[in-house]
View 1 (cartoon, helix red, strand yellow):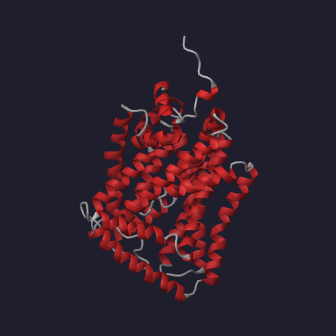
View 2 (cartoon, rainbow, N blue to C red):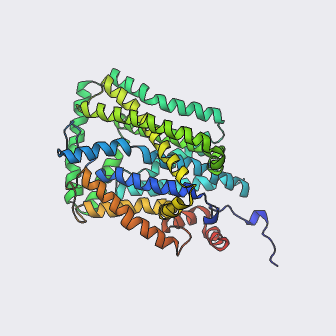
View 3 (spheres, rainbow, N blue to C red):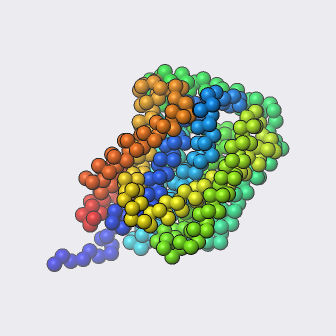
Length: 420
C-alpha cells in the first residue's frame, strides 16, 4: 500500500475534469460563440470606422444584421465571460487556500500574470481587441483588494458600477466641446486609414506594429483612458456578480434555486429587450459624433440591456441543461467551454488569417450579414468538432495545459492527469 502524501507535499492543483460543473462549461462554450459574433467586425474592418457617423455598410441587409447583432450580442457575451471569471476565481482560490494557504495568493497571482502576458502579446501581435489582459488586471484587483470584501460591499460596488454611465455621460455633456469631438474624429479617421493599410495590405510585421501602436493609444490619452475605464467598469460589474455567485454556491444549488431562476429568467428577458431596443434606436438616430442627453439615455439603456440579456442567456442554458436531451445536445459546446483560452485565441488566428493582407486578404470585404454567417461557420464547423476530437485524447486544451504548467509547475500538472 502506498503511503499517503503529507499535506506539505501536495501542491495546489487545477480542477480535474470529473470535478467540473458541467453547466459552467456549457455557458462558457456559448460565450465563445457570442464573442466570436461580436468580434467579427473588428477582425475584418477598422475599430475606428464610422467615427464620423456614416454607415460603412449601406446595404439594408447589412444594417439590419448590424442592429440585430448589437441588440442581441453586443456586450452580453464578454459580460458572460467576466461573470464566469469571477465565479471561477472564487472556486479556484478557495481550493488553493484549502490545499496550501501559505502560497495561495502567490500562486493565483502567478496564474493572473501569465494570463496578462498572454493578453498583451495577443493584443500587440495579432488583434488589438484582446480582453484577456483586462481580466488579468481585474483579477488582481479581486485578489489583492476585494477578496475580503463582504457580500454587502460587493452589492454596493455593483450598484456603483451601474451608476457609472450616468455619472460619466453627465460629465461628458459638461466638458466635451465640439472642438474636442472634431479632434477625436480626426484621430479616428487617421487610425482607420493606417489600419486599412497595415491590416488590409501589410505584412505580418506591419500588422503587429500597427496593433502595438493602436493598443498603446487606448491607454495613452485622457479621452481614450476614459473610454477604456468604462469598459473596465462594465467587466467589473459582472465579475463581481460572479464572485457573489461563487460565494453563495449558486452553480451547485441550481435545483434548489429553480423557482427563483424561473422568475428572474422572464424579467431579465423583458428588461433586456426593452432596453436593447431603446439603445439601438437611439444610437441609430444619433449617429452624429459628440455627447447628447439622448445618447446618455442610450448609454444607460445599453448597460442595463447588457447585464439583463446576459443573465437571460445564462439562465436559459441553466434551465435547459437540467434536461437529459439538452445535456446531450450541449455536449460539444461544453467541450469548447472546457478549453476557452485555446478557442478564444484560435478565433483570432483563424480570422486574422482570413482577413489580413498577410493571409487571404478579405479585409473590408465582409459585411455584417456575411460576418454573422462566417462566425457561425467557424464555431460550428471548426471549433466544436475540433474541441470534441481534442478532449477525447487529452484532459485539457493545449493552451490550458501550458497555462496550468506555468501556474502550478510540471509536477502538479502531471499529478492531475494521473488522478483523472
